[in-house]
Structure formats: structure tokens, C-alpha cells
Image (cartoon, rainbow, N blue to C red):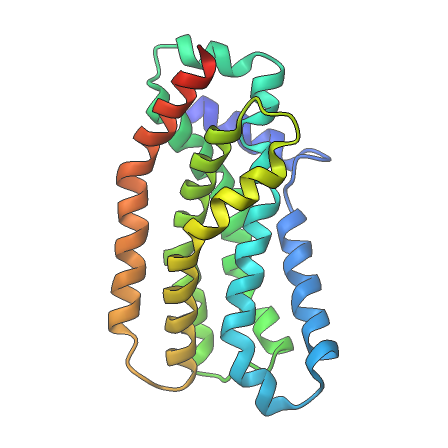
Length: 218
């Protein structure tokens, strides 16, 4: 599992591997929003939690088509399916590698981008906390979507259509945590819901992804 994780991390960090792509997209979104809605600081402060969470979600979506498609094309996925490592562990490692190369940089960069959108001071901690709790679910759900569409020609659009509805609960509760935190309100309930969604996806979806991959590899 460690060897597979290191391999995926190295591939993601190479040119064209997708590392940094989500971070650049996140920066573009947060830079363009003030131009679109105007320079009103109060308006930007009110919409900042939702915009930052939406930007992070779309940034995670960008590199999902690379999760399994390249391994499918060069035959690596067939070798992994016949290896001693269970297929559930394979998809879990790939989801972890996606989060490390995409989700974790977004979590670390979120406070800087929050400054661009005039996020209130109390909201920075809760923005980072909500992204740290919620982005693993985005990677795990994205891995499930990649398993569903692996082997399909031009499956990137279909992948987006399948995954986006599954992202909605995470987006709702993640943005709600950041919004309540920015306004000084109680954040316990949405944060617990967000954590529950993440734990449920981590516990269940690797098995669903492995089952789908077995069907597609037959």
C-alpha cells in the first residue's frame, strides 16, 4: 500500500499529473469573484464561505478523471486487480493520494484565498476545519465516480454529472460550518454532520468502488 501511494504521489507531481492544477483553479475562482460581484466588502464577506467551498469542490473535480483512467489505459489496473493487495485497499490508497495532492493543498491555501474575499476573522479557523473534515469525502466519492466511468471514452463529462449530485451534502454542511463560524454562531451540528458524511463515505464507498471495478475489468 505504501509503494502504491508513493507511486501515485510521484505521478501526480510530474508535469501533467494534475498536482497544483486544483490550487491554480481555486486561485482563479477567488480572484475573479470580486470582479464579478463588485468591490463591496460586506457582500464579499457574506458570500466568501460559500464561494470558497464551491471553488474547493470544483478544484477537486478537475483531476478525478486521472485517478483510474491512466492505469486503465496502460494495463496497470489489471495488474493491481490480480495483485495480493485487495482492490478495496487499492481504491482507498488512490483516494488518499488524490486528497494529499489536491485536497490538502486547498486546505492549507484556503486562509490566503479567504483574505481575497474579505472573509471575517473568526471564519478562517472554521473554513480550514470544514475543508479538512470535508475534502476527504470529495476524494472518496470522486474515486467511486472514476471507478464507474473507467474505460469509457470521454468519460470526464459523465464523471462530473455522476459525482456532482453526490457532492451536494458535503458542500451544504461544509459551507454552513464556514458561514456560521464567520458569523460567530454555533457550528457543532453542521460540523458533526460533515464528519459523519466523511466517515460514512470512507467506510462504505471503497467496497462499492472495488465492486464496480471488478465488473468493469471482466
